[in-house]
Amino acid sequence: MKLSEMKASSHGTVSSLGRDERFLNRITSIGLTEGARFQVVKNDRKMPVLVYVRETLLALNRKDCEKIEVMEVRG
Image: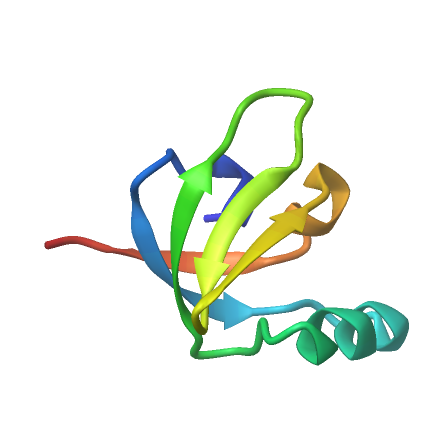
């Protein structure tokens, strides 16, 4: 599933970040790496996705969220 498809208050783990080297350098520099656990704080249409990861709140644009594959963690 893509990060942009997750609902607010759900938890997950990053499974893949895509293959674009420029995107990988930028997204990993802010702390979002494969295997990182996160919580979706807010995911409203046409707005950035707010994600809490590694004790940091990140605002990710929707285009970037389409490149991030995640697994939802329940419970």
